[in-house]
Image (tube, rainbow, N blue to C red; front, side, top):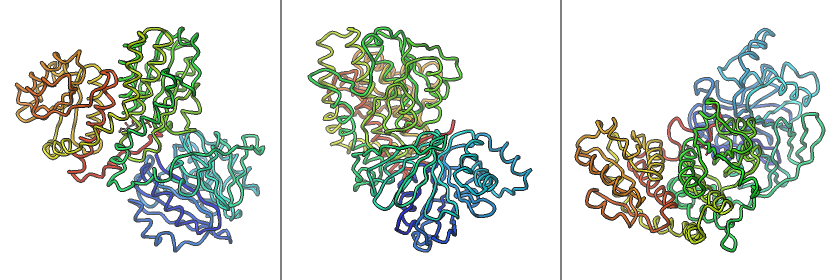
Amino acid sequence: MCGIVGYAGRRKAAPLLLDGLKKLEYRGYDSSGIAVENAKGEIQAVKAKGRLIKLIELTSGGENLDGTVGIGHTRWATHGEPNDVNSHPHLSEDGRFAVVHNGIIENYLELKSFLTDKGFKFVSQTDTEVIAHLLEYYFDGDVLDCIRKVLNKLSGSYALGILFNETPDVFYAIRKDSPLVVGLGKDENFIASDMPALLKHTRNFILLSDDEIACISGTKVVIYNKNMEVEEKKPFFVDWDPETAEKGGYPHFMLKEIHEQPKAVRDTVMPRIKDDKIVLYDISLSAEYVKSIKKINIVGCGSAYHAGIIGKYYIERVCRIPVETDFASEFRYRSPIADERVLTIIISQSGETADTLAALREAKRLKSRTLAVVNVLGSSIAREADDVLYTHAGPEIAVATTKGYTTQVAALYLIGLYLAKTLDTIPQSEYEEQLKSLKNLSDNITKLLEKPEETQYLASLYYKNKDLFFIGRGMDYASALEGALKLKEISYIHAEAYPAGELKHGTISLIENGSPVIAVAVDKRLFEKTLSNIKEVKTRGAKVIAVASNENRAVENEAEHTLYIPDCHPLLAPVLTAVYLQLFGYYVAAVKGCDIDKPRNLAKSVTVE
Ligand code: F6R
């Protein structure tokens, strides 16, 4: 995944491009580059391996590059190692075109051999370079015609920014299966891979459809559809506060986003509860359709997949409909069984995860009805699903998801409860109790966040450990999975999550004197069983840290330390458990001095399969 930006207007482009790239660095940070074009049509490109700061230093914050039109890129390498040459922008051999690209050109080898036969010399190992050379090859006087011809040759995914030396006031932008927004300013216009990168300048945006070509100057944006007819697009306004894309006094975006969860959950839940009923205003599942559902598939990657497991336990409990949860990367390849009577719920914070998008398409191909739970407005998954339920988490910048995850879980509660009510599988009193707890969820997160000291203390005790185990049963197991993922991805400590009863079938042999085991013991129904599993590991020398509900205080007799979640309906507790485990992972990584917002080898939105 990479981030791209573009600018056309009256101001000097380079400092603005660098500023935009700063906001997109979470999408890729192994190298970066910008290209600007001056009024004479001279294109100047500067690239640097490493963090964006290198490029900023190299260009004196962009001040030593003239030109009011430009494009920029921050890279997360997929083809070719991170180095200056492989960094974008890539220039055509004659230097007349410059290109930045996010995505993958799947047929680049074929195109490369075609161009090599025509005498083109390649300097990089990237797939993107073919685009620059193709532009040169197909140009015969009409730049739009040339871009269209090039697009017709590409297969794969791309968001592109293109400069052409004969049109110094304009740059070109195209997207297909990769995110890109056009931001509309006053006498200036922008592109970026996401909206937060531009919130400082505008909150008015246009979304491009696949393979539309946008010609962007400071004063206008003209969009051509695939038939090269001008397409009128209605801009839309986002009410995200520009502040939400800044750290706001927190040392890391991750901690800020952990603390934004009360608001994120409230914004996701409250507008959908009216007169003590769930109203899913943005989706259209008729009672007739709901009654016809025979199975639900839930698909996602990473944390979104974990949210899906919570969803499975929850929906099966309250709706009595079988639910299968799949890793999106596996879904397509296991010949999934689906038809009109199978509802496929697709979960993705970014709405751009390649595997999840592919799973959505597979479900649609099988005629399954698709319902996406997505955070980013207008993202690919949101656009392609039959229905979208937006989580209103606001922009999530830290690579490790926090508020993205808890709002996904909250959204699944809303969906499950809505289905249960429609199917009449839940007694009214239970429905009311759960609704009440759902409404209180946000306040309960606030309560939990008021006391970070215990979690900080625990982090200081365990940050030197090389391995940690997480155990739990039922929904507590799903929480354990998410807790382990949070810890390992940001602190680089090896962490494994197991169903508590499963450990003794092999993995318990790894437990030795002092091994830390985080036991999630929130579910009252399963407590006695979990407690015996806690005893099993304790007997082998484990040090147990429990995350428990007040109902299960007996855990203190076995655990070294216990963190208690505020009281709430047991089925909704995983949201609260998650917050403790996020804090634990965060503080461990903080004590270790890790690069929390941008962990090594990871990117925020994984647009490659
Ligand atoms: C983990 C994390 C990832 C994402 C996964 C899916 O902290 O952030 O596991 O959950 O890459 O991303 P989305 O939800 O954008 O599809």
